[in-house]
Length: 113
Length: 112
Image 1 (cartoon, rainbow over the protein chains, first blue to last red):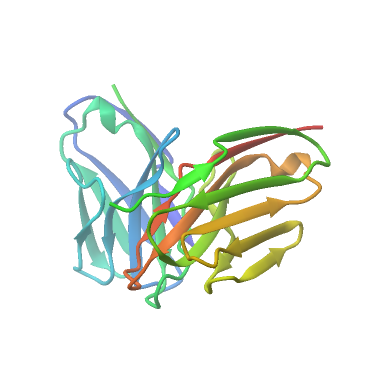
Image 2 (cartoon, rainbow over the protein chains, first blue to last red):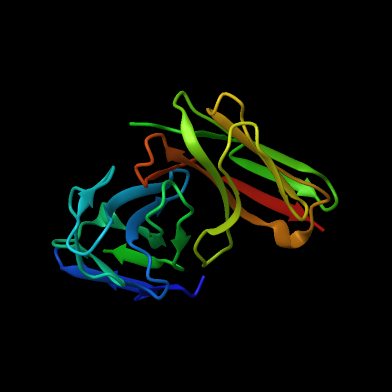
């Protein structure tokens, strides 16, 4: 779904580096989410935001931080990357009405050496 | 926290066969969603279910929201090679928290 765009699509970096993953959406959705995907574990929620400046921890927030400075943008940061943060990361956006479907970007494949 | 058990984990079938997968939970959900993920892409919504007992079709795909609100199934009829991918169920938490809980995924391979 081109409505949610993630950059970069791939990133290789070293342990201890600071990494920022960017996400933007064009549909004006209020809610945005960051997930991590590991083989056999499905999608796990890292952080979510229901409005600008609103930040909520998900299931696996340790080692991550986020920023929602504008409705269309939601960035994920790894302050000091470690190898077990190697994974596929997805951003999603959704409306503010109940449990409506979320729409996903195409993911960022992050490798930490 | 809440968990979904999705089964089977993987399936390898012949083209033309029907496929069935399901998700179960010990918790009640208000919404059940089914997504498909193709290699190198993000999950794409296939079917959304909002009411217990609801049965919804999308082409060759049919999904149902279990009457207990704790389970859902997805059926694919007459599979074709482009059905290959990972299928995820997701439950919307009761209380309309805006959060989804995802199953572990079912990897489907179709032999032409």
